[in-house]
Image 1 (cartoon, each protein chain N blue to C red):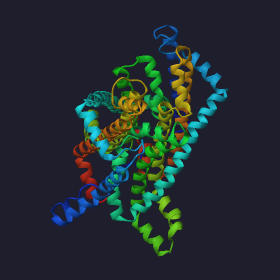
Image 2 (cartoon, rainbow over the protein chains, first blue to last red):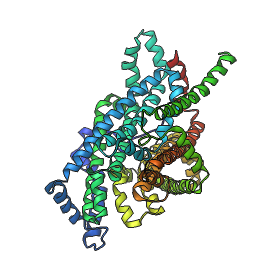
Image 3 (cartoon, chains in turn red, cyan):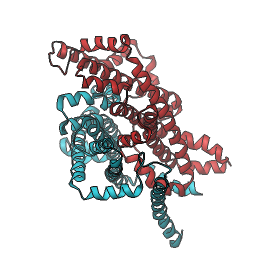
Image 4 (cartoon, one colour):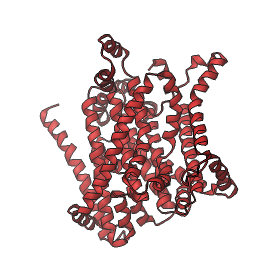
Length: 277
Length: 273
C-alpha cells in the first residue's frame, strides 16, 4: 500500500490565513456552492413529486424530525454507534499490536501471512451468517463482526507502514544506541503513523458497513434494522429518514476521524506542506 | 549471502505458510471432533471440505460465482472509466476541483449500504441493482486516487509532452495514465475490495443472485447446511485472493522502482536482525 490518499481536501495553507476577507469569502463560496446547489436541485426536483420512491425533500426532513426526535428512534442510532465504537476500538487495537508484533517477528509474519491475507481479502459481510450461527442474534455478535472486520486494514497498514520506514533511520537509531523500545516508540510508531491512520480510516469504512449489514440481516434494533423494516412496511418516507440519518452519521464520523488525524499527525502534515509536495 | 542460505530462506517462505494452513485446518478438525465446539455452531473441517468438494462440481456454485463476478466486473469497468474521465477533467480546472472536492468527500463518507433498500425498491433484486451499489461504493475512493495521481505528475514531463506537441487523447494515454499509474493501481485495488464487499452485501440483503445469497440461504436452512455455508465462505475468500492478488501483482510489476517498495525489501533484513 504505497500511494494511498485518504482525502482530496487540501490542507489549509498558513500563508492564506491573513488574506483579505473578500478572498476568504470567495474560498468558502467555492467549497459550498456545489453541495448547496445539489441540495436545492433535490428540493426543487422532488417538490411536486408524486413518485412513491422519491418523496419531497421537505417531507423527508419533517419526517426525520418526527421519527428520530419526537418518536424516539434516536435510540436506534445510539445502540448502533455503541456497537460500532466498541467493535472498532477493539479491532484497531488488535490491528496495531499484532501488526507491530508481526513486523518484529519475521518468521511469524511469513507463517501468518496466508491466514491474515485470507481474512483481509475475504469480504467481511460473508462471515455474518457464520457469526449468527456461533453467537446467535445479539449485540455480542454485532460487536464481534465489527471488530473482526476492522482488524485487517489497520493490521496490514501498520505492517506496511513499519516496513516502509527508511532503513537509514534504523542505522541512525543504532548509532545513537537507542534501546529497542525507544526505537519503537520514537521512530517506528511515529514513522508508520500516517499509514496506520490510513488503515484506521479504511477500518472505519468497513466497520460502518458491517454495523449496518449486521443490523439489516438479523437484529431487533439499530439504524440498519430501522431502514430495512421501513422498507418492508413500504413506509418509504420513514425509510428515507433512516437513510438521511445514516448518511449524516457516516459523514460526521469520517469528518471526526479526519479532525483527530489532523490533530495527532499535525507534525506530519506540516512537514509535508513545507516539503511542498 | 551464499546461494545455500538464499535457497533456505526461499524454502522457509514456502514451508512456513503451508505449515500454518495445515495447523489451522488440523486445529479446526480437533476442536470440532473432540466436541469442544458443538457442530450446531461450527461444522467440522472434514464436513466443510466434503461440502466444498460437492459444491465445486455443482452448477449451483459456479453460477453463483459467475453472478458475483459479473456484478464486480461491470461495476469495476464503469467505475474505472468514469473515474478516469471525471478525475482527469477535475485536475485541469482548479475551480472545478475545489468545488467538487467537498461533494466527493461527502458522497465517499455516505455508506453505500444506506441506499441499498432504496435501490432494491427501485431496481429490484437484479444485476443493475448490484452494479449501481458497487459503483456508488467504488467510484469515490477511486476518483480521489485519480485526482492525486494526475496531480502528482511531474511538471517537467507535462511541459516536455506539451513541447513535443503531444496532446489530447494521445497525451492522456501516453503521458497522463502511465505517470499516474501507481496511484491508479492502488485506487483500483481499493475499489475492487469495495466492489466485492458490496457485491456480497447486495446478494445477502438484496437477494440478488450470487455467493452472498447462497451463504445466507445455507445458514437459514439449518445446522445440516452449515458445512455448505463454510464452503461458500471459503470460496468467497478465494475469490477475494484472486482479485486482490491480481492487483497486488500488477502493482509490484509497475512499482518495482518506487521508493516504498525498496524500503519494504530492505526492512526484511532490519526486522530480522
